Image: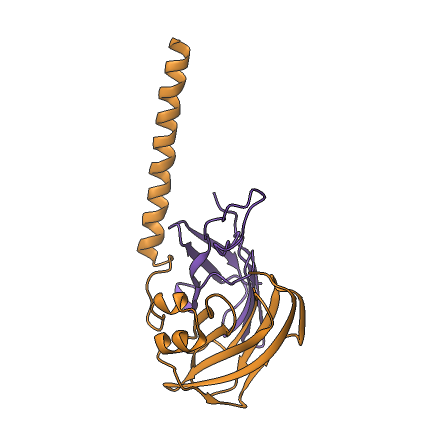
Length: 103
Length: 160
């Protein structure tokens, strides 16, 4: 069971800045545990952010993104109260979508 | 024994209910288009398997990107912890449509690939893992052409 993405979006002067921390282990598949066994790769592969249903950012990750991926980006438009949704899929097929209102 | 049986059955039913609700939500998100699916300017997943920078660029269709001073790549000169290296890419190129971050000496070079729709700024701030001291490359596609800027980051303790 995955944890919700921490997300904050602030609109100012016609631009919305989105700051997010996705909650994910992001295992590269190259790390060894205490017993020396390789920990299998487990990482987010696809990300999409939508503002009122319109895609404002879409991305793909490889294995070398830091644990609990941090992301900041900006898009034109957006006003207080608008809905912003970040959804991701990982390489195990797990998915989640979290929503925040722009402030 | 009966008690045990009943609780198992109840447990099974509860699980079935949970799964049902889960599928319902999944269906709803799919209908609303809220889940990531293979996208317009997305790269072929095999670009992420490429070991070398050259192979990765080839898989992305940007083998010979031109240097550009309209891309700003903000990385630390030295990263004490290779597990979290802050990277900021800002493209002032008109019609920036794609931003990718690559690390030459990582086990797989391509780290992140972003599609920038119209109305979204050519700006990405993120944190990546670096295995060792290496060149970090910001690859930008703007108006159909690839551009790049590269900087070296010294890594004290690798994080891959």
